[in-house]
Amino acid sequence: MIRIGGSRTSRALARGASGRGIAELVGDFGHQLPPRVAEAVRQAAADPFDELVSKRGRRGRSSGWAAVPAPLATYRMTSEQVGGVWPLISSDGLPPTGALMGLDFLSGGAFYADPIGWTVNGVAGVTNPNIMIFGAPGQGKSGTVKIFCLRKMAYGYRTLILGDVKDEYEPLCRALGVQPHAVGHGLPARINPLDFGPLGNDWTALPAAEAQRRAAMVFSRWLLLVRGLVGSQHVQFTPTAETAVAHVIRELTGYATGATVLREITLPQLFAALKEPSPQLVEDCRYSSRQHLLDDTRAVRDALGSLVTGHLAGLFDDFTTVAVDWRAPIQSLSLSRLNPLGDEAVGVALTCLNSWGRAMTQIAEPGDLRVIVRDEAWKQMRLGVDAVKSLDADLRLSRDDGCVQIIAAHKPSDMLTVGDAGSQAVAIAKDLMHMCGTKILLGQDEKIGDDLSALLGLAPMAEQIVTDWATAAKGRALWLVGNREFKVQTVRSATEVALTDTNDQITGPSPSNADQSTAGQNTSGQSASGRGTGGQSRPARPAASAPAAGAGPDQAA
Ligand SMILES: Nc1ncnc2c1ncn2[C@@H]1O[C@H](COP(=O)(O)OP(=O)(O)O)[C@@H](O)[C@H]1O
Ligand SMILES: [Mg+2]
Image 1 (tube, rainbow, N blue to C red):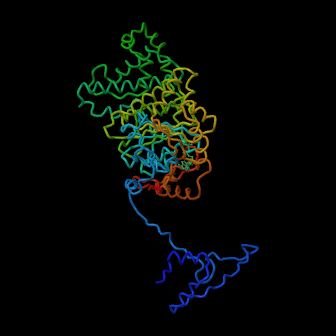
Image 2 (image 1 turned 180 degrees about the vertical axis):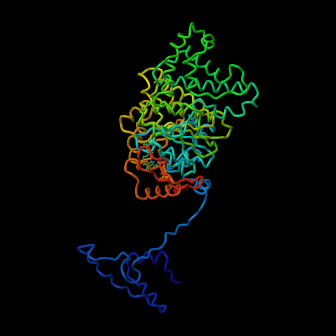
Image 3 (image 1 turned 120 degrees about the vertical axis):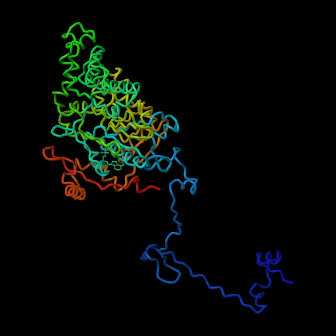
């Protein structure tokens, strides 16, 4: 028996030992091995690319290539299921709840913003749902805020824009089917900062204790407002002056005389009562004479005078005419018409709106969630320590009110110019930043980056994200959520691009936008910017079509 694979035979073959070869062996059984073709000697081509090959490859059998679809399976699923199907994708560690904002570049996953959820569920370091957003002009602060508000609407959040100083939220309002209110000279809208707000509802039906509780809330808010207005004139609101104002408020509303229905009052009424004080007021406030009272309250009257007879007359000195639909998804008050009056006038207007807005949110029912936006809030904060205190009070209440308060500013020093270094105002302004559980830091230059690091204790790498990575594209930001940091690019959907574009103000409307705004004129009979005749001329912005409810980024998983 012949063992071909046997160890002796193979060893002999390997040694090249003399003997019969495999071919002969196979021939003994009547077979023939195929002849071996001599290998062609390959000549190395002098030029390896001497021949042009078409993109389909060489012609001929067994050559060329054909485009075939990649053998990939396609799956469709909700983002909730993705984690189950691909468990190895790392997450950013935050629960995927709230508004899907865009991409987290550190984890490679999606980034969701849910300030109230973070607060309630105890994400480390988030003790309140407030957001402070810093960024150089044009980096996308307002864009980020608009996208956040829009996407939060899908979760039942309503938005209140407390002072739109550039009228840039108007397209968003219109897209959501809401007509924004414009405040300015020559316009019919009046806002009474001494509005009762919803606290005045069903006053007669209230039990005495509840009526008293509400009256205390209303009066303290009004006093805070008057304090802010007086402070804006850089005048001290003395305790005696405060007693006098509080007394007048109680008298005018009828509270002092035990009226069952409180009368709403206006700033001119308050002004008049302080200008012509009653003997009762002089006595009750323990002034030695009428003149004493007049001298002591002069600063208060002068401050109120700017709203009653000064350059803001006719805006905040009458009963509110704006019918706020509190169930609407968004409400906004456009203030751009006040800009020619200067930053201080805008600041005073923002202070009045602030008070009014607080009235509107004061008795929100549980589960009635809101986003309150204060874009360009520094204009208000520059008015002085009382304006800062007023903002501070709002931020402290946000947790109880179910509100996400958003404050947008260029840089921290905007907040710190309220007073001298080391002053009370600066201390409160610094505190204000710590009253915001979430901070969004869009691109800044190196100098401001240093300021931010000093104030917020950023590590060098985090600072570099702000001064380098974030400046490379709009909408990029370092999100500080409590103790944690996220490197996020906010991603806009096609609809949102039109709603967040503010470049038209500089460059004029693009042809496609111009078409849209003309279309807006045809249907609504007025310009897309909402202006009638007589206003400052400014290019109209697009009236974008309404997004579907809960529209998220088109890139969403
Ligand atoms: N997330 C984003 N991605 C890309 N571009 C954006 C984004 N957010 C805003 N922009 C663009 O940047 C420009 C300036 O944005 P804006 O929000 O007005 O800046 P800021 O409020 O910081 O001055 C807008 O015209 C908008 O088109
Ligand atoms: Mg802006």
